[in-house]
Length: 259
Image (cartoon, rainbow, N blue to C red; front, side, top):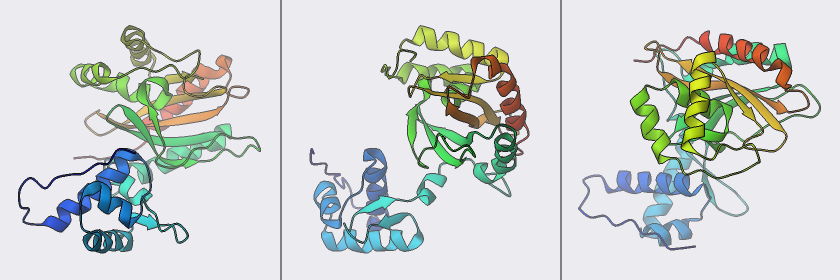
């Protein structure tokens, strides 16, 4: 792996804060775990400093350390920092009643996701009650253009914000159904905007379909998306409209009073 060093270009008044943020950013960007020695080498910080900072971050719940490998990794608490917060509860907590309703009605896995840059991040999920089910790790990421929650949020953004993000997407074909051009994505987003829900027809993973709708704050801005995800054998094309209405209704019921 290429060595990465983050230079401290000017003397910081709070060097430990700067170094702590660099450690978190490094682990987040590279989606990996690392030992104290590896963090010290790649970030260019003294081992003693890295030791103190990682211990503190672990005690605060932002890092976890594998007792066998001694490697640090981010916890879900760090991921939650990026989710929109209301006055009394955050996006995950506010979405739980709607998610429970969806799972009760369908038996399928339901997730709440948010958009970070041009990727979707899974914040929470209620796993399917079926023996054969789809699930993902919390914090897992997926390109926004090839998953239902990503397209649901993109389609709901103000035009200027949407176009700025679409222009930054670098397309990759994951399955035969993956959208691979900006023109096709714009057409898909227009369809989603018209009907109110998005589909993933095995565009990210073979055999998995999803239906999603945006969760909006009190200003109407899309701060996340609720999705149903399951095998194509149960998420049928003939039921897309019915599932879309179910998810749209659930998403619109989420009360999130963001400032």
